[in-house]
Amino acid sequence: MKADGHVAWIDLTVPDAPALRDFYARVLGWTHAEVDMGGYADFNMNDPASGETVAGICHRRAGNADLPPAWIVYFPVTDLDRSLALVLAGGGTEVSPVRTAGDARYVIVRDPAGAVFALLTNHGRSG
Image (cartoon, rainbow, N blue to C red; front, side):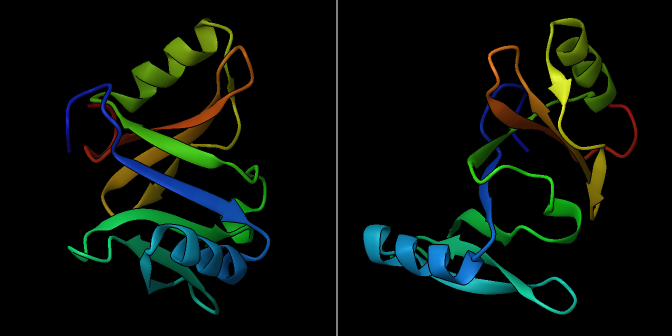
């Protein structure tokens, strides 16, 4: 994972993920790969030339039910707990609780202007 401040990932969470998957495939030429979510699939969206995964399109279900229908940028941080505390101290808010995905931990937050983004670390607990 890159150092603090770089973009690590982007995804979009919407009620109809297949429709948006197809929309972005038409507009950007992206191909897709299904990601099993246990009863349904979200989608990794891939660059058609390299096959590299460049984004995700997710259903607004289960743990994602409270997320807004907006592209969410994931910024890597070395210490998720410290970075979350700085968001809160700076007037931001937590949109959803800290979650895990494999060895990564992430949290969706809102800045003081209302823009939503995520903080991400793959270092277990703090740092």
